[in-house]
Length: 119
Image (cartoon, rainbow, N blue to C red):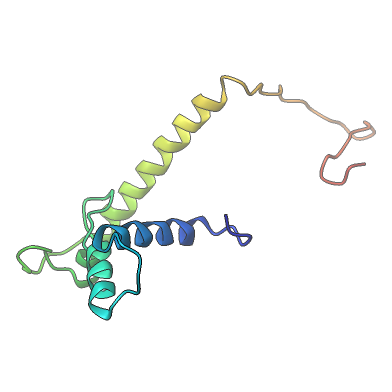
C-alpha cells in the first residue's frame, strides 16, 4: 500500500489498527488511556518464539513478574528455523510453475546476454 514498501512497518501499523478496533469499535478520537491500553496489549502479545516483546525487553515473566533469562541465542535459533522452513515451503510452492535453468559453463570468447545490462 505504501510507496516506501516497508513491510515490517506496514504489518506493525495493521496490528495496531486491529487492536484499536478491538478496544474501540466505534469511530471517534482515542483518549490517552485507550492508546495506552492498545500499546500494552500489542506489547503483551506472545510472538512466534514463545515470548512477548515485553518479556524479552525486561527479562521478566509477563504474568508473575519473576526474573528469568531469555537466551538471545534461543530466539535467534527459532527465527532462523522459521525462516529456513518458510524458505523451503516457498521453494516447493514455486517449483510447481517455475522451471530451473540448467547450469551452463562459459569460456572466454563466448557471446552472452547480460539481462541486468540489457545488452
